[in-house]
Length: 400
Image (cartoon, helix red, strand yellow):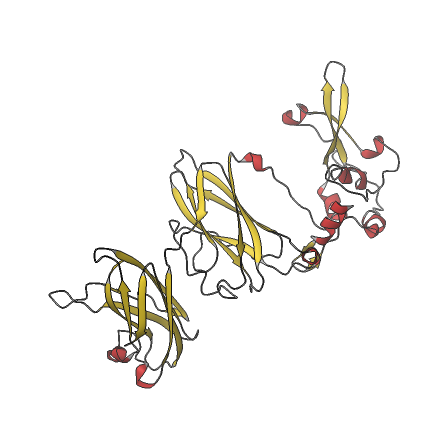
């Protein structure tokens, strides 16, 4: 009975209830008025089937008046198919070919597609994990406070994992299963958490923009989401991104990977240990636009100091800029120190301005002082912004 209640509570799909095996089904769904017949006669067995089955029989040839099973357990679940579909052909397997003894293959049967449509509203498919030689699982928690409520612009704060498929002589088949843990009984009756997994071909690095995934998952309010990936032979590195629709609650989940080739799965590392944030505004003449315009020099400028323990060491720096969604925004990162010919010793700038959110990962940044200049693409676009800088060492950030 416990198993029955579990399936009842987990039968909400996209907000619609698909109840399993109710009294009303027995009275209405199975009231098949037409006499059942096989227009093509008895189905012939294939060579593969002949190795396991001897002939086909219907449940009515095994027992009289088959009835619905109400107390369902993991050991009797297959019998449901046997008892509620009396017109299905049940398989028999050979026990002793010399004596001709037969044993019923409980739960194995053939049924016409017309009967499937008549008897079922939804079908749950199962697969055997042992089909894959290599398997691995990770368990984790995604708190409601991590990242934005919606990840339409920024997925950099989502849980991300590096998947590395090791060298193989043939193409690899990889299945990725995300399972959300059900921790409250109310979750069974009304699942409001829409989850999915996106796959990016990004060499295993952290992904910030949701654009151009290799496999884009569909957010569904099911405890399970399965993504299937086919990869060419050789070493391949992917980034797996867990995603939710309008995240409001903390979720606990398991990420399982099944593969036909060896692989490594690990969280994408975060090298940043220090974070500083400032707020500002583009207004009046201080809304100078991008470097294409002479007024760019009027934009607000922020001074960043990178403090390494040794002058020979370098830092990892992450720059994030958030502004009004209707404006495309970007930034310039430029060292104050210059070379002998007057050029900055280190400079990075926006190759593409993006609506409302811009991010740039900077590697091997030398110790020193830098100017950070956030801007909109067009001059005269006024509005507030938030500048966040993270680094792998001590930093100081303030208005110039």
